[in-house]
Length: 159
Image (tube, rainbow, N blue to C red):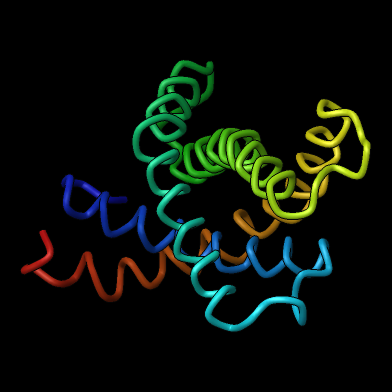
């Protein structure tokens, strides 16, 4: 969809912003944090998480996911297949990386409650994947693509 670096930046920020917003609220609910932190702390957490997620997506997961997705043997002329495979690779990579971030922040703020590191990470990955994958494929992906086409792609100044 994006054809220029500037469009790619807008698209990435939109997608990352939407996913981070929903996943941060989900993780705060799962970890019983809402009600125990102030609104300012919640917003700060959201901003920091967005910055980390954008960096991870831009410099690591995005390039690796594209390389993996386009090296797979499938008909790349079918746009829906390309979108589904690339989105799947992105979600897997982002869940694996951002779950490390979640594990670090959780261990720094409330500890791991004596749980082994690897099993804590595996549990975080599973909990995040079961929400992130359908969120990306069914809600955020189509929503962001639609908003991108309406507000960014049609705007000649953005290209």
